Image (tube, rainbow, N blue to C red; front, side, top):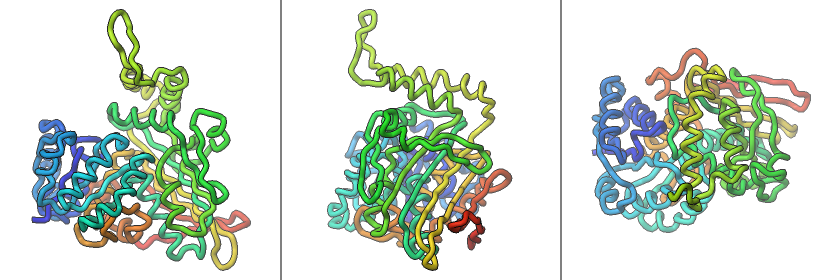
Length: 415
């Protein structure tokens, strides 16, 4: 039986991936696995009720699992065709879950957007090769679709790719969990690698070194927002696979800005450390308090900003040579009704489907730009989005060629 196990399948990204997998119909069985069996059961029931699987077949079932228990995780993965890991934060759960998949000899896909675990998992390349396991890491939005577009440019739209600037915006999701906020704090409290002038440098988002790279960007359909250095792994993986690359940056922000800036302020005042404090005779971990406080303020900040629902945009600017002249290719994937869940979960499902069909390079551990064919990912992601009803009013995908004079020419997409 062709079976996929979606770890973290009851979360905001995993639940979307479950629906997308059902829409694609690649797998005979989709296992929604989560720490909470009740939550997994609810997601599975909702997917069945929505008749997501009716478009291609495949049953959807729920399983409870604690990914911290290697034995039970290994038993769950045993016999699966693909493990799709949506469990965050990845700096904690990425490498051990990949190791469990390798030991179970199950091909693996994830949406890891943390730097340190990406480096660790790339270091498991030989381990995966020896086990005959293919692992596609960072197959979400950024990283994921961003890498795929850069590969598309390198494979023919440009003769030479010299620069990549990735910018992302999202917000307004129905809810955010503690893991999401901790991931954001992690980005603000750790070094951010940027590839500048052919060298890897380190900056910090909230310090002067990072402030030099903050720019205001126009996100189609959503407006202008400042974007800040983010420690997403494209800045270390793209230079390894594009020999002419001289620049790679990753910048992002969350809306409403007041919500994003609240998180920045909590970090700035030192309220996001893990060393406990004694408050009225009880130990309190500042990080846990800050996360709870940020989440408690979120509904008010969303209301004050007039945010009605999820939205997001991925914008990628690739510079290089075409016809001997300097050109830029600008990709913008925008939505005024879908956010991080759809933007990440749908390409993740496309990656899992390609893995099951033997269309991912391997064995070993590889990022998207080295492992998949761009049009195959984009075609599957678009097919799933259409079948799920995600594509519609307020959704757009555009690619433009910009010449040295600033003239913009639309580039048609074959899907």
